[in-house]
Image (cartoon, rainbow, N blue to C red):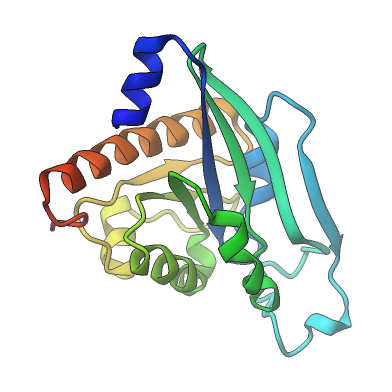
Length: 202
């Protein structure tokens, strides 16, 4: 990416905004909390009767809180690159906040829970429609059936150019690997756009 390389050559730190998205209960708050070098900001609130009939808790019945505005954290990938992470709310009734939260983001991590894989489609549709670089991070939950990553790609109809990576949102090293994969995707996306090639060539 030209902005990235120019900043590196000049020695000035580059602040990069990254969105972390996905359905209800996929691990966005945990993902940001595992990697953030500052005390992460979250807006967790109790799931109330307002959600009944609006947000399905099938598969995550034990979940008692949810993000109602955003999660925020920061991680320094190198002396020249600092990522600012903005987590989107997972409940459909808060989706109106997404546009503001992802504005200016260079890339997105879309988390998926294979127990509720259909909940991934709204986030995937949102970022594909915006021709935005993203990676799909398959968050492994205890007790969940393990699927091959290519099976997940096929189930979600993702193009071959979209990275699908395994993730443990509780593990700092795993989260860092996902973010590094995303930065690679951001650079590749920029190069494709600069060459005038389709952003999501199969």
